[in-house]
Image (cartoon, rainbow, N blue to C red; front, side, top):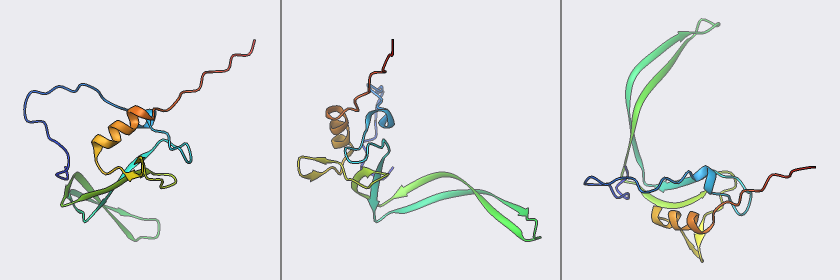
Length: 119
């Protein structure tokens, strides 16, 4: 958590889950992956183990295995299409909060094409 999200404090239940990949469609390139861009971020991961392999060239290959990720001190800059980088906007303002993303997705739902049936 980066401190910007509202953490439930009581017995709240999930009212709705939005599958972003099924809902978002970039108006520029039509891809469906939305990413959150953050700045001033410190990321911490727990290193749980280290694997050492021997390659065919007799060199050691070392690989770390990490656990959960913690994000500290970040600020959301924008939400954008992962493919083309287009920032999502409400009117002329770049959306910087998850509530704005929710509103954007509610208004700009992806239109599923009807299957073409050939008779």
